[in-house]
Amino acid sequence: MKLGLQLGYWGAQPPSNAPELVAAAEAEGFDAVFAAESWGSDAFTPLAWWGSSTERVRLGTSVVQISARTPTSCAMHALTLDHLSKGRHILGLGVSGPQVVEGWYGQPFAKPLARTREYVDVIRKVLAREAPVTGDGPHFPLPYAGAGSTGLGKPLKPITHPLRSDIPIWIGAEGPKNVALTAEIADGWLAIYYTPRLASMYDEWLDEGFARPGARRTREDFEIAATCQVVITDDRAGTIAAMKPVTALYVGGMGAPELNFHAQVYRRMGYEAVVDEVTALFRAGRKDEAAAVIPDEMVTETMIVGNADEVREGVKRWEAAGVTMLLVGCRDVDQVRTIAEVVLR
Image (tube, one colour):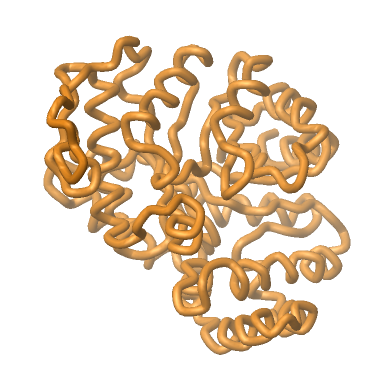
């Protein structure tokens, strides 16, 4: 099992101890460091800034939002960071949700699967640098010849030669169709709210993608990086209680009530009645009550918590389910070291 340090996206201010966390992660044997974005900080700049002091860990985005950049722009970011890091970049992509895509980026959210496929295809053409990049898809046509076009657009190749033509592309996916697409066209799956209990269901989705003509990878060389809070503690009950407000936020408050991908994940786990109640309470402003109705097992499905021996057993269970990397958040250097000692030693 590999470990990835998830720095996430910033709140009101940048985190003050991120450089120390990154340094500790590299020193303790973490495989990668990841940064995310929502509608504040971006994901590439922190990796370039904090990653400049590292030599070994891979630097990944988990995730950059497809609607935030054209695919050629995203490819420029990726090839630049890959050069600066001497070939250590992982490009993690995700579609986000309609509230962000349409409300923040001013882009249509429709057809997320088709947009993802087309987006990845253009990026791979840029990185291959075999010919001027063209795209005949409806979402990212190159050259653009639609309304308002001058007709002067010209297919181009990147001026800068990419260090690697095969920069790994991982996709953040939650639903069955998106996971199957990920297995077909990507190098890895960024799984959120993964539970080993449903590994057989995920395997069906993944196998559908691997079986498609032209699939890029097989199960043997495909990475599954799952967000998983790992907490080593003797106060298991207290830790679970502290996590419930976060679960309530994502289930009840992230996304529109009629389209919340995180809520859909928990419905597939069998918590449909709980999701409905949490959503109603959260939308009514009763956030404490929303957290209180979440059962313990709904939290522990997607995290590993307990003493050192319990955590080791939990890691074995996740590894047996097919996960190759745990993406963990750490509040301080001591937590980085403790997790590394238990999981990697």
